[in-house]
Image 1: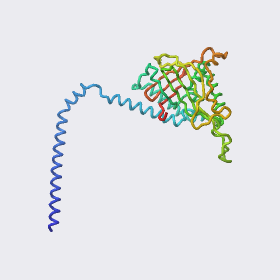
Image 2: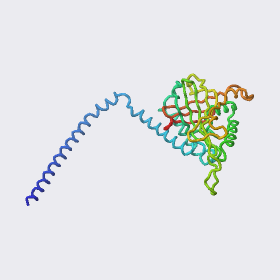
Image 3: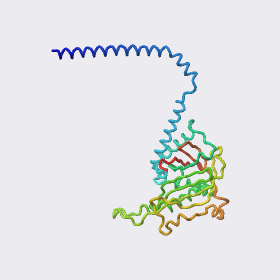
Image 4: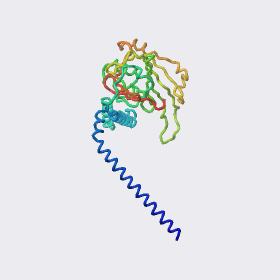
Length: 314
């Protein structure tokens, strides 16, 4: 009986304590609502007198982040833009959607102004998408100079189509990483693309053994940046100097030349001027139409776009 009485007293005490706290909580909330209603006018005055709320610009930053995320996702699903031409019209709608996303980012009111200082371009950038036909390697100043020399979009596209058929058909050659490294102090831009040969030389169904081993490396084109600054329209001018091969770790060079291939320099600039159909140095230019800390969009003379990001893993 004593135990039952003790439990009853504990329950009663707990109920009283809970009721007291609930009443106190209600009083506090009523007081807070009263204070809030009384201070509405003064709060509105404070907001009106305060400087612009940073949340407005933060909203624009979120929109830009969303656009960049969408662009990156579409770029991945389109193999950096190359599937648009490999599979005819299958990706036409997606390519059109990508163009809209890119134009929305470029024209966004929250987009940062393109700086004039060349140092803003410094460092490594990796290509994640391009709208050009027939080859993501066309971001290289060497191929941009060919486009400039033709001075005809239809003829240059025909040249690049034939070049792609020669170098990228039948699984003989594939293009991997495509990147640029800018150095404003040296006034140089280094364009690189990794390529492998005989990566897919197997016999389907019969077996999984390779007919030929895989070789490859990195093709690096070195160009002089002739502009002293980024122009008002984002224009940056370059002149191709030379091309050399670089080692890609884990990918052996061609067996005929071996490591000696890395010592060979091709003086593209000198050879270019001696060719009778060229009318001067191997010059080219791009227009930087969007640039922030980790995202860059460049346009060629015909308005085709190249999208770059800072590498997550350099």
